[in-house]
Image 1 (cartoon, rainbow, N blue to C red):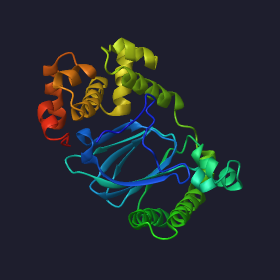
Image 2: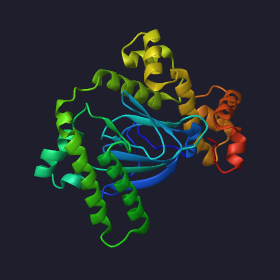
Image 3: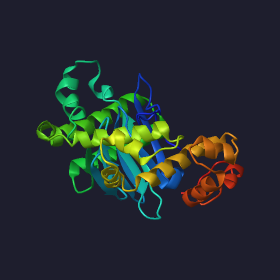
Image 4: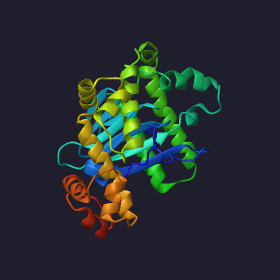
Length: 298
């Protein structure tokens, strides 16, 4: 599976509908290339609950190792990514919803008093949810209940989902509302620099890129750019670009492109080098991937 994102790393997936902006999905990290979904962001708030395994979850400058039964609040517009921890797959619930589901019409008292103060506070990008806190465990239980509602679609489905989300948000505000007002902004310059580099890589991955070009986007010298990227991403800039190019090639192979066409389309200089990197990332050759229907190994 490949995460669909635009040039600015905004996710293109529909998170529900305009009239009911909620989406819930049950996922496995093994469905993504290399067992990870890439850095991206969206206008919606996201709640995650780990069902099995572990996930190495990153939000802006924060990093979490989530275990079974734990979850995470990821605020709107926050950059985030997730990866398998070790060899064990991770199955999890992902619930996304637009804040207007809670606040209703623009300028409402609920929106101004209880929602905007958290959503618009850049210093509160994420909150770890565990069973050690009574209200956090209740929030995770509510998330599981919402999953059941999506499975069954009972009478009053939308009202029940909204009721449970309002309950979660009420506890979130009760425990973090005042803290959010006092929270210091995160290092926005660093986060925006990372956005700029990622945007440049994903707009130009099919071209021959130089370190000078990337460093220019970050406003750093070449050596500092490499160190900055490694600190933020946990891998070198070169390895990240290779992973991204391989990820982009998957859909091309699924659509029937030849190995040579796919290789050249995503920025590899030769099909042989493409095949070598592809096998190292997926455990099979590009030709095998095409024949087997585009199911990548974790």
